[in-house]
Length: 59
Image (cartoon, rainbow, N blue to C red):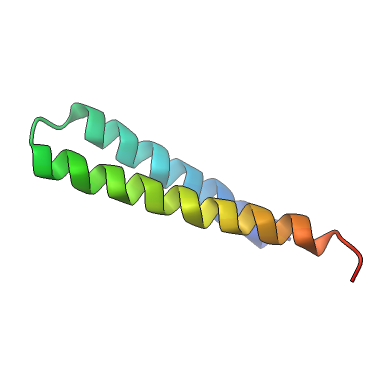
């Protein structure tokens, strides 16, 4: 579970970095790319959160 938490935090950091890069970019294509990357990292983070929540539920 500790590994999953570390990966979750890493994905959140990556998403935040992409959003920062997007906000600082002046190129439209680059902004779009960083937006898509940030969203992808957020989806992956949500999947890990869901998996972690499911691990605590009885089967």
